[in-house]
Image (cartoon, rainbow over all chains, first blue to last red; front, top):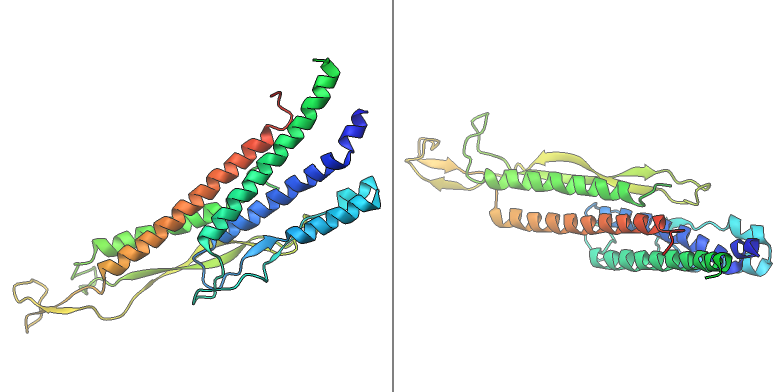
Length: 126
Length: 144
């Protein structure tokens, strides 16, 4: 039963989502750090790409398939530059993304904690 | 992977912005310095930034693209000539009574200072968020 909890789909998805949020925070922090560097192009972790990978791993039904899912940092090709120095980072937008990403991270940590809490109460019976 | 995510880039940006604020402060402080160590009027200094590699692109860790941090690429001198004003009583006036003033415009320096301090604040906010995330990760498995 306990093994069933640690290999259950939701728990494994939550683990991978933490990785994704952590990596995305690194990318977004680097973007904001480079807001004044001429010609810098912003990096991001593609959510749709990551979700597609997760979906594929889930559908395969193979527990090990989930381990091979890795979020990838890549150059954001959709961002357009409105500045003359060619930098396409917008400070306010980046801050918004960082905050919502951190909130997502908090949500997932709480979810995992809640999972543990449930196992704990099953063990202690209270 | 670091305990606190994204700290390297944020720290480098804070450092770079602080250096820029120092240089702007130097410019403003010397807005009326008509004689420096070489006997010339003070020349305004400009800071320029560049990207340096913080993390190699590495497929193993899931990073397909490299991440960059910021560093100061150089502090250069602005050589545009400053104003020349008539002030024959000034000790640095030439034989016609004209004084060569520094090429510092305080309005422009103030704008630079504001941009710099806004960028500094934003990065500080990110550092706070990073710390919060690390703390959040440490609560996993705690009894609530």
